Image (cartoon, chains in turn cyan, yellow):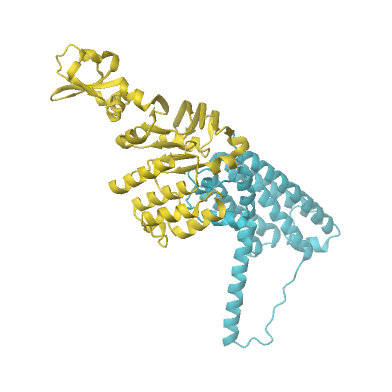
Length: 231
Length: 280
């Protein structure tokens, strides 16, 4: 079944508070972790990572609520566990793209309105773009995605928090190892994206992280299918 | 081939357990499931529907298991719950569109015909429809996917008597196809008595009786006796009232009662066989 059809079925979902606290707790932990390693000290930003992390956890919450609500309308359609997992995994990028487009349209409209009333000639800001840093952050977010999606298919609240905490620990270790490789100092507080740009090892770290993220997505998807399978 | 086979199925929801469920349901029958509140009727339906995962045992639907054929099983089975399980802000016409898109066996013509017949406004949000209308809509969606197995959990609650008769007619028309099977639960035992072929009594998560309806009705007689009557020991779980004792007796013991007994209704049999606490 194509994702758009699945998305339409998701519109029949009645969101509940089930799993909401877990989602809030671990979304906040991930945002804190991101800001610790990706923006330097004392600097809290909300960029695409915010959107990505929120999308991952909203998709995770939907997957959890569908999986553990036996009367969910999704079970009235001829889908198997593989279809559900595949589409659950597509939900996060889909909602991120959808919200991004919405925000872009909103942004363009706001800028157009402002330009009607303001003299914007000569007003410009220069955003620095770090290609390695951006690739690194994409790979990092894919690892976040692959670590937290299988937890959506675990029923026990205790186990969800244990695996969630372990995932945060793994992400912290990954960041510390990379910072150590880049600077020789574990407690360097500069933005990892700048460090990647400035270091000779930057490209190798990015490639390695992409390989790890691809493998983790593969294993994560496989584990999710097993967790979702009818026994 | 049986329509549904449950072999030694155990399932759990929180503290509630379905215990050692064994059911062999042939094709072309209506099975009425009767039980008190909390007896496990809805859990049984969810377990058969493969949405509440069993702990152990085997469930075979039309010869297939969920482990390898979930998609085709879901295409052949439809379920109606005792509540509307869809987002109340969705309009009926969107739900219809989703069924058209995503259910390969959805019969648009049948659906539209039934919607017209029951005068349901698809432009209204589902939450704005009355409870009875919601139930009707759920039934119509379930029947319109042409399932060979229809699970109906308290489908007739909240439907007025005239529409109820219409629905019973729809169920009877659906059952003209001898491959179709219905499992229906209801507190309104007289409705089940009208339409069911087989009866299941469920009590505290266990099947206490699984019998053909006619055999069951022929097996018991309903009696009223004075407290001093020497035959009161034959009465199964008697209920005491101001006139004496009332209850059911097994057909083999009914000779002792001659003109004092009458054919027991399904409700009377259920009350006296299952609801033991009424004695007190």
